[in-house]
Structure formats: C-alpha cells, structure tokens
Image (tube, rainbow, N blue to C red; front, side):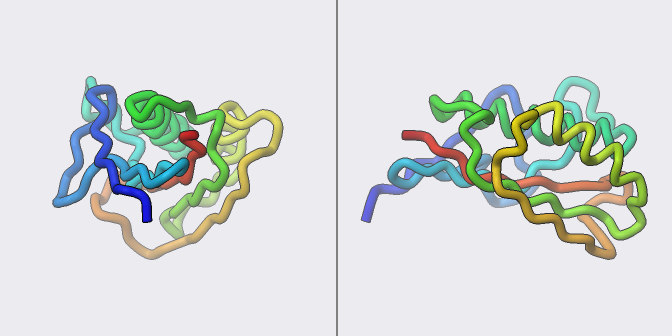
Length: 128
C-alpha cells in the first residue's frame, strides 16, 4: 500500500476539528469536507456563494498537493435539506466544471455543523 501523505493548504480555512485538509495516497487526493466559508472574512453567503467558495477551498487544497480542481474525478455535495435553489447550486458548480466532469453525488441532510452552513463538499482528485 502507498504511504499516506497529509496535505495542509494555507489558502483554505483551517480545519475546525481533528482532521487534515486532505490525504494523498498513491495518485489520488481525498479532501475532507469543505464548507463555503471565506477564509479572509469568515463569512458564509447564499447557497451559490457557498458552493463556489467550497470549490475554491478545494482548489486551494489541490494546489497545495501539486494538482488542481480540474483533475477532480468525484465530487460529493452534502446540502442542507432546506436548500431549494438547486439552479444556484448547479450554476456555481458548472462554473468550476463546465465540461460536466467529474462524477457527482448529492445528498440532502437535515443538519450541517453550523447554522449558517448550507453545503459541505468533498472531492477525490487525480494527483498523479
């Protein structure tokens, strides 16, 4: 088995618990879930803004690992169940992945960690 490498990204918000931004194993990078919190302001915005910021945070993590968000092979969106503006979710998502890749799964849940959190996103990225 390949050695696990912890990845920390200065450009992404610091983890809020006992976990790292990502783990690289072999050619794959597995990110921890990222909220749409802006690192500079600490703010959360609308659902579209949160999706955009979470993907930007994942992009920062990918860059720290020597790869990029454009090499994502699987993305999971965990949305709060009161999110109804799926058009805004898809618009923000498509801005990062205009060609329809990567594979994607979406879950709706009753609660996320913070009251202002509408989405958490994780990704598996080709880091070869």
